[in-house]
Length: 402
Image (cartoon, rainbow, N blue to C red; front, side, top):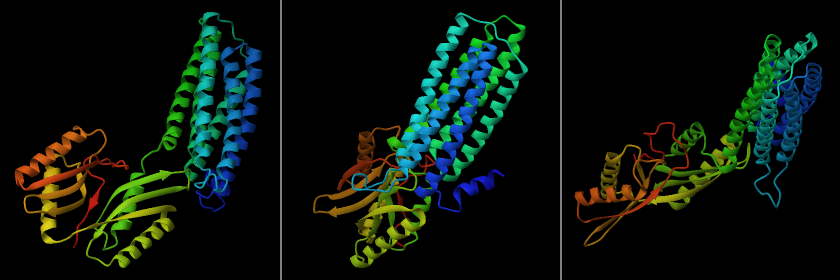
């Protein structure tokens, strides 16, 4: 049933299509507004009848959820706007901002509920339970379970951080309402301030959810690395072309779901026909756009492929690999002279490496000098923009000439 409902939301459209995402956002937001207002009214009634601070706090939390659903709905509608002169990359990042606003609202509500709960701990009051109260709380848990399942499934279908934040908030609400229900039952047989303690537990759960959701939505706003599986597929597509010897400096820019740009350097033989290589590069850019919907700019790095250069490159690669397998080189070239030979290349060093950039450069230069005093290394240190799933596997790829 859930799959059919998700299918009706998508209607066979592309999950990255702004119109499809706007429709899904409207469905999710509209459902969230209606159900959370219903939960607010029910829990507020239960809290007033029982005199429970925790129930009233949980009710206010649902009112907050209704407000954030409005933010989500508006956010998806704004994110679906087309690019214009002032925003040439579109408005897709508004969806990320929406998720962040939802997270901040959750954090604020957690603080307020925590404050009320501390007051209830210091000045406890008796809680009166009734069958109606129990039924309302049990129904609230089931409704939140549905909101969680639906938003998680729809969020995964369209890869939405905003819906993921909403689903996480619903899961937290289930836990908090369960804690309120349990405390209300236990409170009938003890004079301990169970109600205030339950409210404090609710506040902690809400704060945890809000913090995790904020981290998830901040990542794409600040700039996150490309998905390793996507990067691997791009490597495969590019290197399927015989004239491409290597790929490095892959940079990915995320402007919202379905709106991305990237650039990278492709090493090509310096002795090939320039027009032919340019045609291959254009073809790769079109192929990546068709397959992944990413606008791509490729910089050509011509490299000399004669036997002497290949031998020297192999020596340099071995020196760098002996220092650490996670290091790699690219853009290698040499300029021989009567006194010394310049070895010009870049070393890609992963973030958090055990040596500083200067130490890497100094150590590699020293080892090359030991191979021959004629070698004069000119080294540039780079850092990868893509996080490799295997820390021992460098991102820069070189296959050489067959």
